[in-house]
Length: 333
Image 1 (cartoon, rainbow, N blue to C red):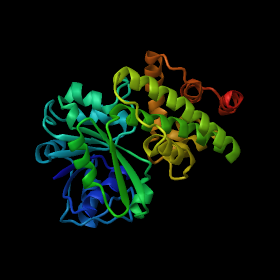
Image 2 (image 1 turned 90 degrees about the vertical axis):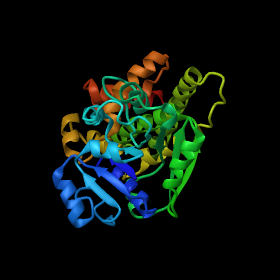
Image 3 (image 1 turned 135 degrees about the vertical axis):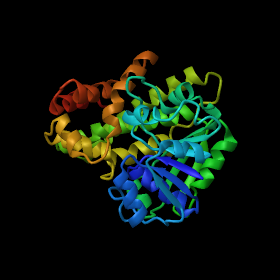
Image 4 (image 1 turned 45 degrees about the vertical axis):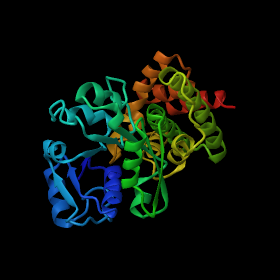
């Protein structure tokens, strides 16, 4: 049985894929009302409400320990800002010998680490039994069964391929690679850059500007990925970063109206304060929280990332969007 920890749109989309493949899931939700609604109405009350689930395949619960105890494979799909608080409800070691699949696209605040590093240090999991899911893939298009693509990254090829097999459907194509850290960092960075793309869109910049902006964002991302790979995987073959898990995910997140990070940025570009934009959003924009952690990581690796630095200033240092976008436009080529 699969366990799912999380209740948002992405968790709901992944639950749909699994149940479409006939997999039973024990699904943790924070709210008793959400559990009751799913049990009685067979759909998520707040996210992707058009997706209906077979009652024979879902076991919604508010008991995290039940998920940890009864499931061999556990999918974590909680916003990174809240993961530590959620998982501290489970005794250390409860995930030992489990396969952990991460659908998280953020940095744990305060720790400035990816989820796999946190799970190894705090939950005593084996890194070889950890797999990360990345896109490009929007939950809304999964709900509509529009052809989408997922990349599964892990250090053990057999474990990774088995995880991917559970998510392969007529409307989901899957690929695997072993760049566990790189694909996750790319997923974090694309959310940050999508916030910047949204700010530009909200401030009235057009598609011509956005194409140049995103090109430069990818160049900056590429530089970071190369440096972090050389430091973590010295001697191994460099991945092809010009693929869907890296460039493709950046493009769809920066351009698509489905992107919550772009939507968050659009509000800022239109004049919302950061606080009011956070309040307005019904979903968490990972890029807002992640940029502080990525600034620290980039500093440790000594990678210059001027675009990300300005986005950080607009989000956390009260730089006005007009000033920030003017600074970015001056550095683009």
